[in-house]
Image 1: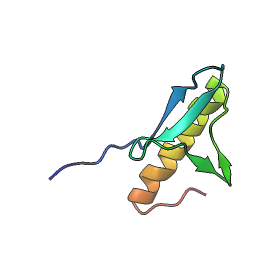
Image 2 (image 1 turned 90 degrees about the horizontal axis):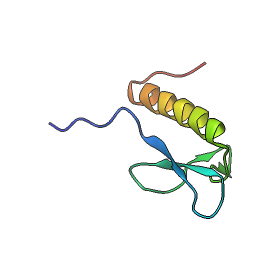
Image 3 (image 1 turned 120 degrees about the horizontal axis):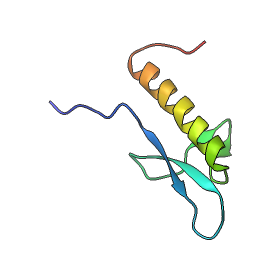
Length: 67
């Protein structure tokens, strides 16, 4: 049996500017939150969003909701 990674989202530095993208490691596509693509984030903001999205992903997989 293959286990799935606990984290689904990571950051990558955008080429040609100072911003970062939060992306889905399974699809390679940028993550979306509340209808906004997470493609032009400051580094600290991107890291915080990755932590939040990964926590939501882990809890969703375990059948928990974040209140």
